[in-house]
Image 1 (tube, rainbow, N blue to C red):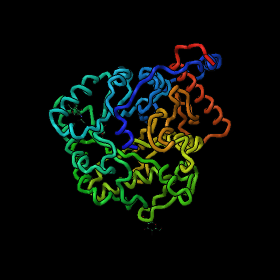
Image 2: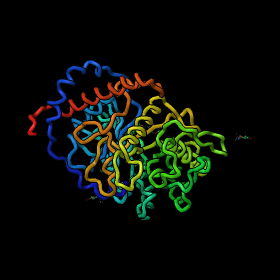
Image 3: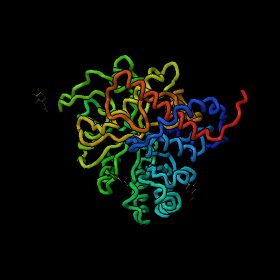
Image 4: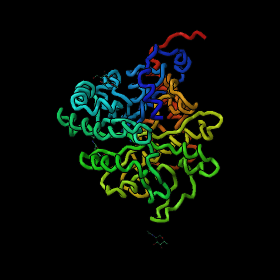
Length: 405
Ligand SMILES: *[C@@H]1O[C@H](CO)[C@@H](O)[C@H](O)[C@H]1NC(C)=O
Ligand SMILES: *[C@@H]1O[C@H](CO)[C@@H](O)[C@H](O)[C@H]1NC(C)=O
Ligand SMILES: *[C@@H]1O[C@H](CO)[C@@H](O)[C@H](O)[C@H]1NC(C)=O
């Protein structure tokens, strides 16, 4: 996924608004149920990746409205798009932003100029709390980039400190879970040996500056690769007997938590029990090619819906039960210009016009902390979610235009 994004970095385009005729059809329903969706509550605890490799996305100000109506207040970008950062000023939404230009960022002057121009001016009204330098660099093939990764992180960090933003903005990078050579059982987690020369000093850097270790993890890939041997309930957070790690006796009932704990074990093996792991991307596609087993609407809804329920409960992993799992779901929208398999263009929770790809089975405004619902309360919650989503569509499609059907 990382490579595709990097290649297409320059083709991000914002097109004219979409047909808005949907609204006139939804309006009567919206008006009749709008009172139910009006409740507001504590923000949801998950973040969302706002990828923009598409030519049909709504304007960032409309996206800001959508996220506010969904009560999501953490967003991750792959760049530092000033239009987005400006659109979210004053909203309280927290941003992770990115810069993949490792070569330039190793130059102290350029790094400082970038932070001064693309980060500092938006603070504090837009809450930028983290910069990711590079995305999935160590699982790629570019050894020059691998060698530049830590120097670029250090230079950006020095720029952040020099500009007086040290306490406000973390500096990190996002890794693919493929940097692990072994992830099962989780206690045997280890980084790929040839990457040790890069990872060891990066771990030292994180410990020194106090920034989180970010991982992109997709149990979907493991399932797609071996649907015959990987249990679907285990990857979808559905009820299953779980698997016991023979070294710790800890029981794992889902693959994502096992992957997180494998990263903790790999870091521990390199002398670091002092770092926090966060999931900078995870998700499940709602559509795929014929050979992409498991890429369905039902599975995507189960994966993301079940994950969000666990996040709402503040659940930790078996190894770190008191450290709530922290995720940025991939992704906000389906992105029509991503190359590769059909699944790549179908990770979104929303179509570009703001309508949901599926119901997540919870009320975005007041998220129930209970993991189990009776079927009747589930219906109510699904209905309430539909209302929230309709309201969200309303805020995106706020200017009704006639249908030219
Ligand atoms: C690096 O910085 C220069 C300006 O200093 C800019 O023109 C160039 O586009 C940047 N990116 C790369 C990949 O060279
Ligand atoms: C930076 O990361 C650390 C470790 O995850 C976290 O405790 C801290 O709150 C982060 N700082 C900001 C400004 O988000
Ligand atoms: C795991 O359970 C077995 C059997 O009950 C026990 O012998 C072993 O000491 C346990 N190991 C750990 C690490 O708790």
